[in-house]
Image (cartoon, rainbow, N blue to C red):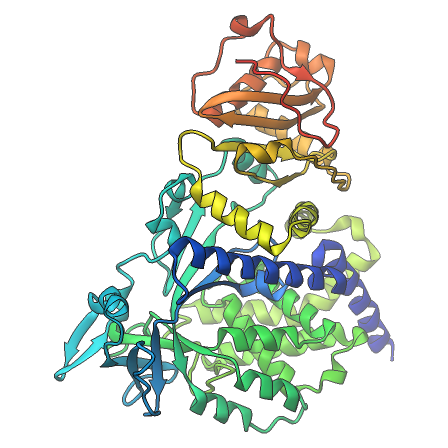
Length: 572
């Protein structure tokens, strides 16, 4: 009985910690509602920019599911071409709609993958866009996933304007093309001081796929737990499937293979979790990210998602209750341990597909087993230590919690700003981001709230006149310490600058438009105090740092930031 009571107390502690770092039921609901609106606005704006109705662009992944935070998790985007359709198992072909149609061939292909054999060329324009990736095999034409990935179809690659020109692409990762937008150096500097990630977006191109035979088999599976319920299953049966351009590593015809995925179905199933299922999922993802992935990249967030979906199908949902959070987390770790030991984790939607096939190489399996055993044997002990002495957390865990608390505060401000826009206004802003030229009307704004936490980065002059009144928590000291540490790293004398907060720096056409700061007099009078501000200006504009003598008679406007952006005069 004592052990049960202890687990209940630990469950309450864990649940409360998750609430504090941004995963309370209310925050998760707010996050998913907002990202849905942003996703719809993104899709509409993409169609308008491309002047095409057959391209759908939506947000997916952890942020879409409500289990990820901006600056802690990447943003995942799925770009779907509805001018193409792929059919599995010889379903009747409808060529009247003008779509390019491929037959999905499964024979002698690894489970969960298909070859796309051309059946109908459809409209000339759509066919020409895919013709470059066609190869001949046994007198038939197939769409090569490898060749398909040699062309970047992301909208930023095909448009002009500041956002497109300042988007950097990294080497592809599987079917994904990672990218990030060049940030103002000050923003990057502050994010690095706060141990936050520079925002990265993973774009995956997909083709619609008629995978009813696979979904029907999934729906008829026996489920002792009663989850998902019949209503949820019926809804999932109506959701689309896709194929994405990646083959099973090391297999025959890898370059021709496309992977079948059920992205929207998985999002819907995650949303059907109760709050304890969701929290177990979040904790397992954190364990994977900070404990297991340093050992092996193969323990991905998608692996964790499949573990959680299987656990939810095997354990009755009523057992996922507040008091059993720790117990269910233990069950999930045991399930993952068994999968690692056997080198076999079935895909939830297509059980014949082994997610660990060809993975966990060398001594990775042994190291993972040791770590998972340690979590099972010592996890509760460590939690009890924390419950007894919460001020004696390990440095690593304290850093993780601190990172997520800060990300939550930034997200709070971002959500308040974004929630104030209608979907129509968001569409207009997305289009504006692509429309502004790289020389002319583009401005970069690093804006901070009263507590000195950055909440957004805006584009275009008109936004700077808008009033902003957003309150956050007590992270002023944290940012001040980060800035002081950053100045010290830059060899600035910070002995007399314990209280520094740079609130806003705005650039137009490479010229400083305004500096709004709040600094204590000792810092301003210090020999290198004002020099630090000038150096930050130089870093932000990539221009030579002005000499202090050049502006001695025109010091920056010193005032605490009140929540309304001010650009009273040009100083340089």
